[in-house]
Length: 235
Image 1 (cartoon, helix red, strand yellow):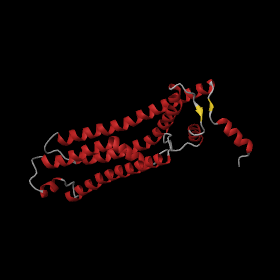
Image 2 (image 1 turned 90 degrees about the vertical axis):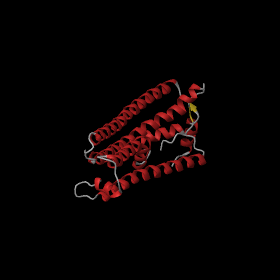
Image 3 (image 1 turned 90 degrees about the horizontal axis):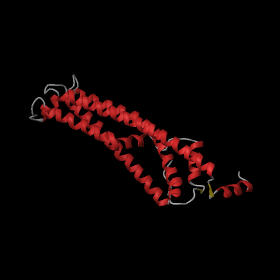
Image 4 (image 1 turned 135 degrees about the vertical axis):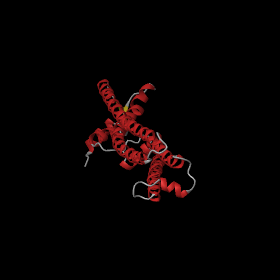
C-alpha cells in the first residue's frame, strides 16, 4: 500500500512539465517507435502483395483456356486465407507500435505545436509507461483478422469468389441450367453441390467474422465515448 509520502510524490509528479533532457529522450523514443511501426507496416504489405499475386496467377491459369480447370481458383482461396492468418498475427505487433506513436503524437507533439508545454497529467504518460513495463497486444487475434478482412482481404476474396462462379458460368460455354453448373463444379470424386456449398460456407464465414468484429469495435468506441475517455485506445 502507498503511504502518505508516495501520494505526495505522485501529486508532485502530475502536471509537471518535461525538462529538455526528458524531451530529447522522448523524441528518440518516438523515432524508434516510428521505425518499428514502419518496419511492421512493410511486413503487412508483403503478405498482402503475396495474396494479390497468387490470386492473379490463379485467374490467369483458370481463364487462359475455356477448358482450363477452375481448381486453381479454389486453391487460391485457401492460400489467401493462410496469408490472412499470417498478416493478422503481424498486425497485432504493428498495432502496438502504431498506438504508441499515435499516443505520443496527440499528447506530446500536439501540445508543443500549439505552443503549450508537454505535461505529465498522470493519464497518457502513465498509460504509455504501463505499456512499456507490461507490454501486451492491444487487440485480439479475431479482431485483427476482422480488420485485415475489412481493409484488404475482403476485396481479394470477393474477387476470387466472383471469378470462380464466373468461370463455371461461362467456360467452356454459357451455362444452360443448374445441373450443368453443378456438374462443372465437380472436383474429382467430390460432387459439385458439395463444392458450391463449401464455397458459400467459406465466404459466409469471413463475411460474418468481418461484420461481427466491426460490431465489437463499434461498441467499444461507443463505450469510450460515453465514459468520456479522450485518450487514444492503446489497450
